[in-house]
Image (tube, rainbow, N blue to C red; front, side):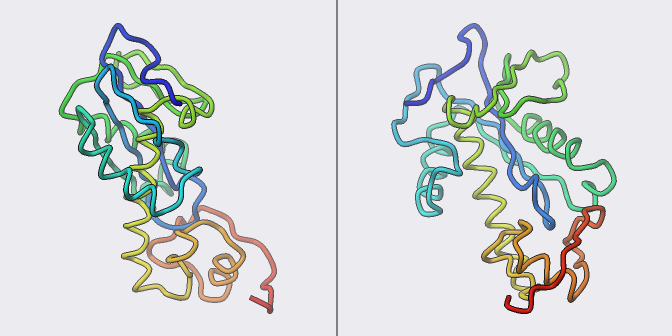
Length: 198
């Protein structure tokens, strides 16, 4: 079972992002604050859950959280500031939107850009260790998938309903065949021969 908090002295927000490794679409991030004594035996890293379970848990998270927020950084912004800085910006935007001010932040991964003077702790594989980070990973993932499903209607050749913008062989081949769409991150390189079987 995941831990409820990293420290108990301050109100704690967990942060995570989704879509960092994609060729298309925004990067999304979420911030979640749970009650100090919160527990949930089902909550886990979004990558370990089915789409159906993620969507069920999204409703539970939004109901149980003291505060939550989801934010994004567009493909155009990613091209301007690079994906690492865009990931930080998305998390900062999510933190800005919280209705409860956190006194401490825990972040999935090993790097984070300080959010004002609020102390933080980076936690490798934090989304499989702490409830608030796991919840943030689920919100970021489900909101991003929802967004990609909407824009996929206008660009069916890239198969975003299936790959959600990640660089699958079919997606890369489509970029090589049809070029970039307005939703692609144009500073990302795509170089592989077209596989005639796909």
